[in-house]
Length: 295
Image (cartoon, one colour):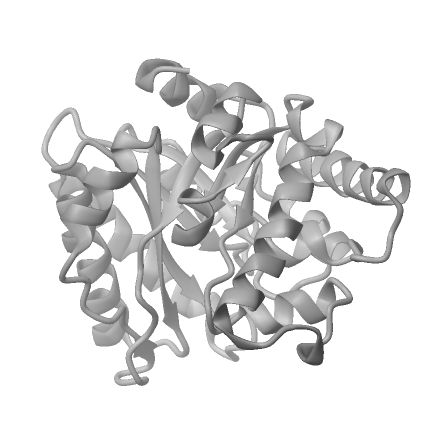
């Protein structure tokens, strides 16, 4: 797929985006969920080798290339690795899956009800390298903990500012100002977030588009103005800690949003499963998530 074909795939594809981007801090938890205990590996190299083997097993599963997964978000080490004897971004594109790269470097301490992203001094260099490998877009996450309008506006401003740097390299940024699903004031805070994002979108230069990755809103269809905005390529939903069934049920109430799940996709996969068991389990999750995404 070339860039135009990838753009069309993301804009119109009847599927969802798999989040395979667990980084250093979240990898041990992901491995434990997969049935690999901490004492099974020693040091970062073995840990990352184990998580890469899991991701490669997913990518090579027959069901992953059946058209229902239209994109996949990768950790940097995954982007640099191989699957099926090919560089991962090339292998994904061959299977009809558009590759994205997680570019954020983690979160700052909470202030004004939010956790901003840590500085990304090498962002342009990383994006340029990713583009050369066939990556289409990026993803970067920050977190909203409470309805502090000043904090929410600050987090949105940072997302758009870093998005402008990414756009300058020719990649499409996926902005992810996640709203903590456990926040008591989320319903009102999400309205503040929506309006702040709309301001950022209206200020984008003509001809530029971004993607948005957002928590499934408390109020169904709250993000309709974002979904319909001409400067938004696609709005995707994070599972945010919900189970597959919970996340899918909530997503079905928000037409136009598609899934970009991690836990919701991987929760029932186990290292100990036979290839047939693994493929059946993954296929069931893909079918359920895709159905919710096109409901």
